[in-house]
Amino acid sequence: KNSGNNISIVNYLLGSVPLTKDHILIKLRDFVENMLFFRSLDNREFIGLMNERSNIEEYIINNKYTEDFSEYLKVVSGQSFTFAEPLPGEKRLYCIMSGAKIPFLQVASTGTINLELQFFWLKEMASASFVFIDEFDAFYHYELSYEVAKCLFQGNKQVFLTTHDTYLLSNELLRPDCYFILKDNEINPICDLTNKEIRLGHNLEKLYRGGTFDK
Image 1 (cartoon, helix red, strand yellow):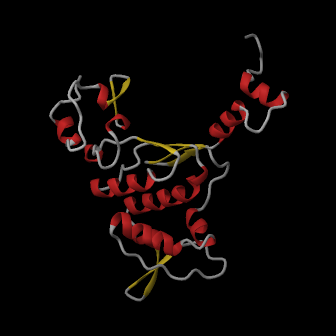
Image 2 (image 1 turned 30 degrees about the vertical axis):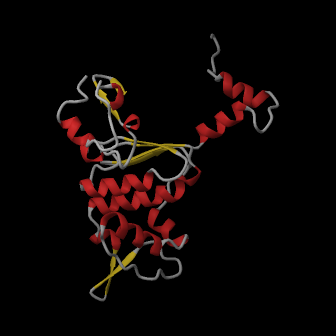
Image 3 (image 1 turned 90 degrees about the vertical axis):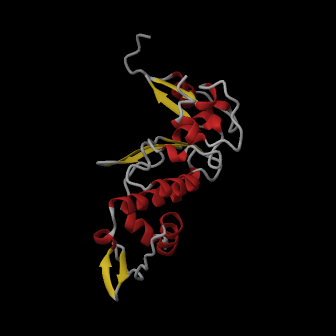
């Protein structure tokens, strides 16, 4: 406890003890190294999964994702964007509007720009172990939030989202034990906040607004 360099026991063992590939400490290291936190409020911030920031539009162009991005915007938000074929070395997305080639960022709303960030992380988080997104829907319409959440919850990774949108309280999106309420410095699943039996046909948002989970 008097160590001056504060090396954790786990890191010490990983660096000094020969361990098999399936050892629990190796699995723990891999899980932690592939955790991801990000948010897009006043500033875009992320921690984990990668060491460097990416130019998202350059990323979309280099990976030939322009059609995928257009389809994503159509599916989750109903917006139709036709992107121009990127020229060699181009680093900005352009969309075609009334025959003119216009930079995407000049015509995209704050919410749409946020969707661009979500699209980037949806592509990159395939190898993530745990994803935490703070206020993921800060600039979204409630129906858009629902569609984006459906995309984020696909796959085998653990995803934790924070929101103020009660519309997302739906049995069609998640089980009741996967919804948590943060209140008075405590966090509890809604199923533990009521003595009422919660069934698949219940409207969770209506129950919430009616005070069912005020326990």
